[in-house]
Image 1 (cartoon, one colour):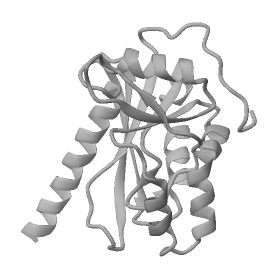
Image 2 (cartoon, rainbow, N blue to C red):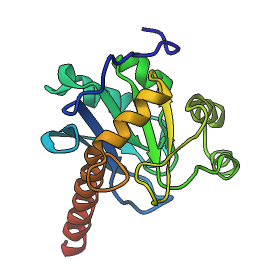
Image 3 (cartoon, rainbow, N blue to C red):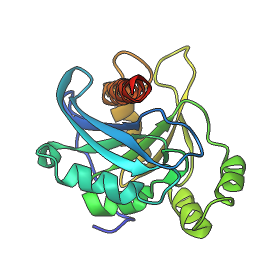
Amino acid sequence: MSEDEVVKFRQVKPEIRVLGVDDGDFIPHTKGLVDVVGVVYRGGYWLDGVMRTQVEVDGTDATEKIAAMIVSSPHYDQLRVVVLDGVTFAGFNVIDIKELFKRLKLPIITLTREKPNLEEIKRALENLPQFEERWEAMKNAGKTIEVYVREGEHPVYMQIAGISEKDAEKIVKNTSTRSNVPEALRVAHIIASGLAKFKEKLTNDD
């Protein structure tokens, strides 16, 4: 499947298996590894599984590590879509969502609560090694699409690979049962943040 193909959904089932992926808190501009947590949900109601990997702060391994985490998971064959918390993890470790789609053969949706400021991101990336590679990955995320998940609430901002805007928007809306992001992503954030706090406490206790 090429990076320009699109996975077509005849219908978006209520129990569609979604993987939400988010990273934990960390101290910016430090060296080290950050936990990345994936949470599998059936629709927006049933938690089916959890997976974990680690990526380097401001590194370039996020695409590879997240792809490997997903492919090696026992849930891989049941997954229908991957939802990421933006395209930058562990600082400015940029995920190439076109490459991730090509490796996984699963549609990729990224969501942020604030509209990405590309000029600001570009300036930050210019201070890091392999700028061209990172910036190319940022551009591969494509245009930013505004989505109003709930009436009267602030929008979220979506970028996609391997899926139509219509299907992506429908999946986001159908699986966002308790907030304006899919439940899989909300829970991935909670677990990743809790793991980071636990590790920080262990370090401080030592």
